[in-house]
Image (cartoon, rainbow, N blue to C red):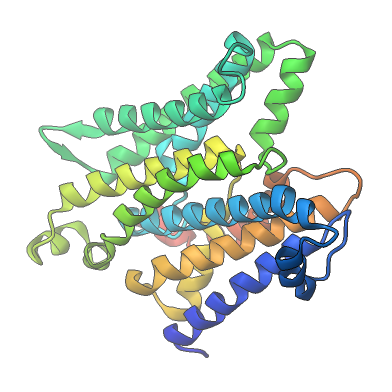
Length: 332
């Protein structure tokens, strides 16, 4: 069994290899070891790499990384391996924002940016709503936070259903593809907008590693160890809202990354968040880069939605987790 440093080293080596393989494989095949030569001397395939493949693989790595970090953080806050970024409503809120834009607004001078901006705003607003509902006398109980997230998730889901009902054929097609998630619209402009927001959120979450370790002992124990649990929850939810909001606004609804990756790393190297968060960042990036590679090559010239691929992987894994931890879920 490798130790934590070895696991991080393996992941750190695997990520650039995954990026190079994903950049080379596709309808226009480029051998990964030819990529440096093509870039240096502007050989055949230069435009494909620079304007099509690189933005796509980088965006998938960014999105996978922040989704996994967010999942690891929420699992630490809730002290539950079944926790997922969708729990606090940010994913459903982003979907509702995008659906409202596609169906009720659309077009106009913001047509290019409208969907991602509306998705990000929807995710953040729903997260703020969850926090406000869960707040009582200046304190936020994690159980109340979870229940508020479930309630607003249901509300946002109903809103998406209503928008689906109101949509015409073209709008319905756009909405369906966006909700299923994917990187077909990846450009350098999207990467440039997503990366700063995702980075700020990730930095916020990385600063919470020691407090999350204390939180794993229990909220009361963490408080007696000197951790401001209310501040921890506030900053954690803020960081998750930024990272997941940025990810969903760029790539649509991609689930299970934040559930699968942190738990696999926890099984391999333990629950120390000083290892778990960087490992999740690397592992999530690798997983989503490879999932996107599979999605766009398995049925050429068609392209599967990446959200479908991650759901096919994550669904059975979630059921396995549920069966393994069902006693903890029921009895706490």
